[in-house]
Length: 194
Image (cartoon, rainbow, N blue to C red):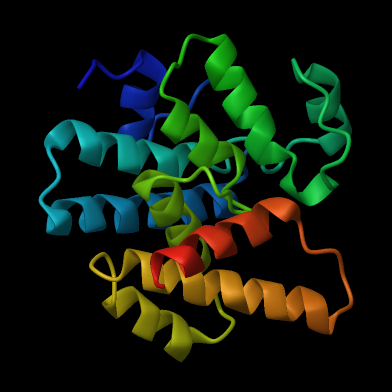
């Protein structure tokens, strides 16, 4: 266990970096995600440091969601032109945090790929992916989402797999591209259940 970077420690309490671009409605969503993550960490019996990391992930995942995608691409240290505009905010936020000295790679991976999923997720990545999808402010399929929240955090892998499955099915039904990161997360979760 190491000390949390000051920006991560501040975010755990809801204080965002001064470069945040998130409107009031977005900030409310971030707060609901952070609350779920904090509650799940407490139920798991995680140590306070881990709970703070999880809460910070909830606040930081959408810290640039309302920024212009073109501006975000221009400011990245690595080109990510292959990613669509609607998901570039995650990698951009992780990039800014990394450049500021945040060295917590699992946290950065969680933030970068919270919209897509990643086969490189550990528990914080999976939990952020799940909380972002299940937070109670989401209006689509509220009963299904509520049932999935009841399964958390003990059913983290099975709930994550259910969400990835829904996302993949939706993309296939719409005849849209399924990102390799999403399929990679599915495969890791499916292999774990064999």
